[in-house]
Image 1 (cartoon, helix red, strand yellow):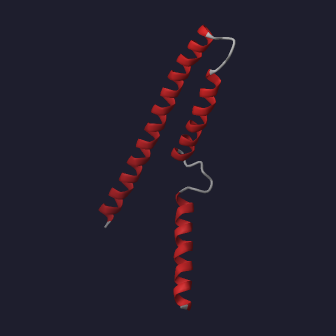
Image 2 (cartoon, rainbow, N blue to C red; image 1 turned 90 degrees about the horizontal axis):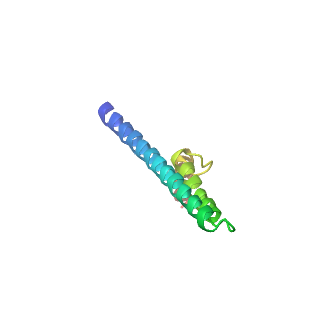
Image 3 (cartoon, rainbow, N blue to C red; image 1 turned 30 degrees about the vertical axis):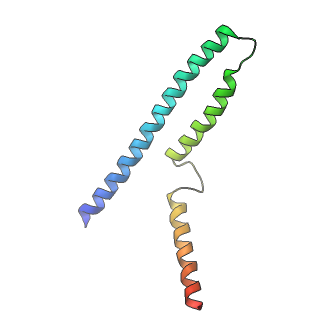
Amino acid sequence: MEVNNDYERYQRARKQVEEIKGFYIHLTVYVLVMAGLIYINLRYSPQYLWFLWTMVSWGIGLLFHAMKVFSWFPFFNKDWEERKIKQYMEEEHKRNKFE
């Protein structure tokens, strides 16, 4: 039983590390692409800073990616999921008890 539990913990830790790695790849691509877009924008059409639209839009997506990977969601994390599962199981049990 101990071996299985260790294996499950290892798999969860490995998945978390892969998610963090994916975030850092996303961040690196964001920085490189934004640097290129800023250069193109300032070089060829400095009168209108259109790169800001991409920076903000993609930045919001990057923020949500970080929130998911680093568990910054105050409601939708594993503890919240477990509490909700227990809540629904208890409600189902009470309904079946009164039927």
